[in-house]
Structures are given as C-alpha cells and as structure tokens.
Length: 264
Image 1 (cartoon, rainbow, N blue to C red):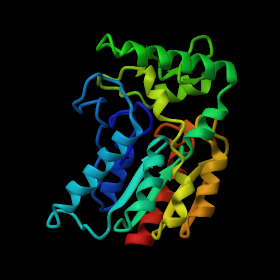
Image 2 (cartoon, one colour):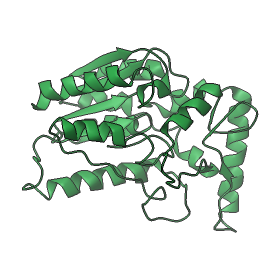
Image 3 (cartoon, helix red, strand yellow):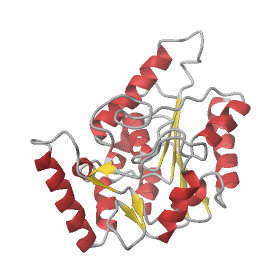
C-alpha cells in the first residue's frame, strides 16, 4: 500500500489496511526512503524513480514468501501520489493481479498545471535554491507540504489544512509537515497514465467529485486507457476519501467489493 506525497504509513493508511485484514486479506504498508521509519538522508527528499523502486522492492519481498502470501493474487494499492505508482506498475508488471488507486495523481504535468502560475514560479524558485544549495550543504531547503493560502506550500488551501489534519497521526508519531523543495523537480515529468494501455489486469480508480490536489481529468482518462479499468465515483474532494472523511465508508466498501470480484 503506497501513500501520497510526503506522507507516512501512519498517516491515514492504517484504517484501510485494518479493513482489508478484517476481510481476510494481507495488507502491507511501508514508508518511502527518506520518510517515516525508512532510512535515507536527507530526510524529506522525494524522488519518483526511487519511490517506484521502493514499491517494486516491497512486491519482490512478498513474492519471495509464497508460504506466507498468495503471490498470484497481489493487488497494488495507492492513494493520491501513490496512485502514480499503481499506474506505472500495472503497465509494467503483468504478474500483479490488480490495482486500486484512490484520488490518484497519475499525471505530474497535469498536477503542476493545476497550480496558479505565480505559485508555480515560487515553488520552482524554492526548488532551484534547494538544488543549488545541495552542493554546499547537507541540509535541504524545506517547504511545507500543506498550508493555508497565507504561506507557500506544495498544497494550499483551507481544504488542504483540514484534510491534512484528518490524516495526521494522533498518537505522537513524528510526521513533519515539510518536504525538500528540490523534490518538486522530480514530479512534473511523470505521466504514467499514458502507459496504462499496456496493462492487462483490473484497475479500480476511486474518483472524488472534485479534486484540487490531483488532476481529476487524468484519473478519468486512466480509467478509459486501462483495458480493464473501472471507476468508483464518491462524493467530496481529495481528502474526503480517508477515515473521518464523509466518503470513507462508501470508498472502502467499493474497494472491498472490487477485491471480492477480482481475487475472491
């Protein structure tokens, strides 16, 4: 189970994992390199190719344990930015049984174009400053992941602040609201939804009614491009699909129904 940008496994994944386990499935959550409980310095540095390698490493680990897991029924699950990795993996790894992507960001360029131009220029300036500083310092230039419109952040708005609070761990888990600014340079050129015509296994894409954080049009296009793609439309916005959000139950029930149909 792959999380969104800058997020850790304790930030909203556990309710889904617990529900899947309760339904009789094994569920594996993990942290990307440089985040959460994973190794890697500097902290908070995102690389799309590295995250995809992390996902592949988890799948390989599962496949090495056929007595513990049914390696013929592996479903890769991703939320938000993790949905980008679902699209990439389904297009490449035909040994997977299926994929689930909720409120997915499957088009980095589309996500960048959703951001106002002035904000984009400020983010790029911070990213370039961090990149240049990395030659002289091991400490990144950080920007907040989530914030209101009064300060520069990767995701901005009252909806973001409320949603981020919804997924923030409530038991003292360290979850810094920051990301190395140069991480932005890794995002815009990844558009895995364009490769989904190569997929051969079922894909469920859970679509909110609106999405100000991930390009909804690209997610809808992903369903059309995937030969076995299907969508589940739920009410609300990007963060409403998580636990304590108004669409969580509808979202979860739809995913469980999909799993029952495709892997039993």
